[in-house]
Image 1 (cartoon, rainbow, N blue to C red):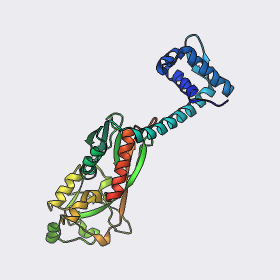
Image 2: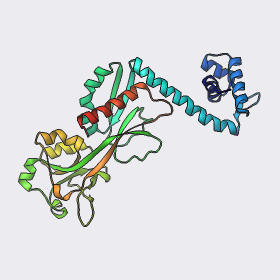
Image 3: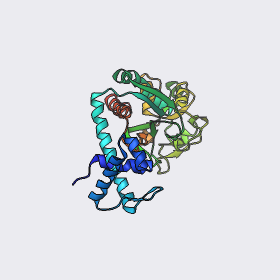
Length: 299
């Protein structure tokens, strides 16, 4: 006989709650029904999953191994059910999204109107941080991360990648010129990040290398602040395409050192915790954001 989902759910509930009585309450079943399901499961597997005493239940070695597989099976079933439910029901509930302020302002915010019209029952909460946050501590459903991921406990969806370029205002270039070498660049006002050495490594070719570590003459903690300083003609900054696309189209910024910079492309991920199936509202936003990034060339 094959194992049923009912037996798996009963087994996992007993482990999670610590008793057959508590599992029965959780599943809205009788204690005898849960007990029979557990007995059938052990019979089909021909092994004991639990050591029963008068005071508590303890997993056997086989039980510990089987528990991990049981959880994976139930999570897969729940995920399939969520996908089907998403097609017939309107997703709802609060969705907390976190991103650095430049990405939030220039990529996500312009899409909010269409997303809310498409999913009117989802309540968006948009939070910005220019440092990496702990998703659980900040109660965040989705965070946008630019660059290589370091937290192996997170699940991630690659949204695309963005190129960073050296940018200046036309007025700045007209006044101070377009540097052609690393030595000439050092004579200019360089606008960098105050709290990130990684972002102060610019894609400049020099001494047979493709990266130049700069010391900013003017520093800021946010890419949006650097963008505003560049537009104001205060110096040269390294900025991602998603942040400068409209400015370049409107002639507010121009790329400098075109012939002496390498293409530096950074991955953009949406990251999230997933102990089981993702909520429909989370899936909706991930699919929507990826769709719009491709459709509109946002990265």
